[in-house]
Each structure stands twice: as structure tokens, then as C-alpha cells.
Length: 381
Image (cartoon, rainbow, N blue to C red; front, top):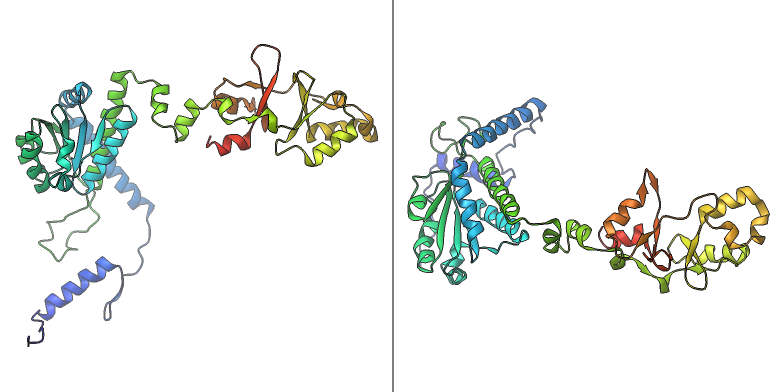
């Protein structure tokens, strides 16, 4: 039988480990007291943002724009796919920059370096570009990936903070993303690991710079390609940007078959019944002749204004006497119009309406449908 496990840790090491575990798990262990909640200071927060701003200034002052332009040109000229890779936080940056480029019409995919060494290297082909994000330029997984990506015919670009790094020397091209410094959340002497001067910090500043560098390059590539808003929108069909640039009124309007229509010769009493339960969520009745020509609308607002002016006489008046009461012919739109333009015309000069009749553009004002605030909302506008 095996002898029982016997801990040989010293009391000092036990205490240190307990402190570390308490900090990592965010809870208190027996015999340890949690620190009192710190007070948030406006001045302290402001000083951090000021420090971050200084790092950004240094970044722009030291960024090699000639080197950056060559990198952008390489991606722009790529006939294959541009693959982005990184480890840890740099992996998330690689994914984000990749997604931005894809949305601009550039063929780009994210390559996980560990998965690449276990089969995903098959995504790399002759003529492709592989961009490797690493602050230090010594990331082991990326260094290991280099010879295999090269063997597949990929052109490798190291994006690091150190042009003399191992990764920079191994790749075909290097683009420097300067690292002017990092915000320090830890006070000097607060660590039990190493010396009080060997402080480590999460790479919050550098990841922001990586993101800004990658996305700014993507915007430049959009400009260089002459990408239009319509082309961009076609790559964002489910997003608000895409919907505003792609959807037309005919795509979101309620068809005429589902609309509450009335004849101009109907009596006011009959209209009151329809107003009570047959507006079908449209907010108005649409007044049309036998040829489905739009003559006007009759809403509860028209009814209120007419009742104030005419009193009980309203029940005997015809619809043609009540529609558009004391107001101009209703705002309308056409089926081929962009839905976003119609949405903007609903709030014209500060005067908001909840619906727009959709009519023909041949001047005959034939009713085709109705677009409402509700239908626009349902379409994600």
C-alpha cells in the first residue's frame, strides 16, 4: 500500500499560496480578511485615461507609416486569402481584424495556431498571406507554425513590437506595432513574486493598439478598393447598417390586401365602427376610390378634430368630408424608395407621423401598401 500523502510545504509557502488562491478565487478563506472596498476617485480614473492618452500619442509618433503602407499593399494585392493568427488576447485581435476585412469583401479567415499544427494548416495555400500577431515576437506556438505555413506556400507577415524578434526574423515581412507602455494596475511592492520592480500587467494598452492598427488598415484597404456603401451593406444583411442600405419600402410594407380601406362615400357612423375595431394595427383608414387611387387617410386624430368642429353632425357626414381633416394630403412614399429614407420622412421638420401610405410613382397615386413605425421596427430598422 502507498504511504499517505504528506505535505512538506513550509508554513511561509502555505501562507503565500493561500493568499494567491484567495486573490484568484475572489473569496475569503478561514483566517484571511478581505480588503475593504476601495473608494472610486475621479482624479485616479482621469489620471489613467491621461496616461493611456500619452501612450496613444507615442504610438502615433513612432508608427512607421512606410512599413504600414507596404503591409496594406501586400494585403490589397493578395490573390488568395489573408489569414490572421495569434495566441491569447492577440488571437481575439486576429479574429476581430479578420472579421472587419471580411465585411469589406476581402477574403480573410482566422487561423488558430495550435489547431493549424493539427490539421488546420490545410487552410493555407500558395499565394495566401499569414499575419501573425505577437507583442514580443517570441510566442512559441507562432514560431513553431512558421516553417509549416511557409512549406504550404504562404507569405508570412510578423506584426510585433520588436523588429529584432525571433518571429520578425523568421517571417517574410515585418510590420511594427509600437508598444509605448502599459497601464500598471499593481502598486510597487504589491507582488510576492520576484522583486518590487519586476511588475507585470495585463496587455490592455497593447491590445487596444493592435485593434486600432488592424482596423485602421482595414478601412484604408476599403478606401483603396473603392468600396461603396451599397457593397458594404451587401455584406451586412442582418445588421442595421445593411438593412438601412439594402431594404426598400416594398420589402417592409404591409400589402394592400391586409389594409383597412374605405370608400369616400361611406357615412361617418360606418367609419366609426371601422375605426373602433378594423384598423388592423395601421392607425388609420385608407380612403380609396374604385380604382384604388388614394384620396386620403382617416385617423383618430381626424375624428377628434372633426368632432370638436362639427359635434354630433360627424355621424352624418361622409368620409370624403372627414378625411385629412384640417390638414394637407398625407405624406406618402413609393415602393422603390429606400426604407430608411421613408423612415426619415416620417419625422419631417419635427412633425412625426406613425405611417406612410405607399403609392405608385406614375402620378396616379395608386395605393400599393402602407409602411408603419411598427413594420420598420419589426424589420430591425
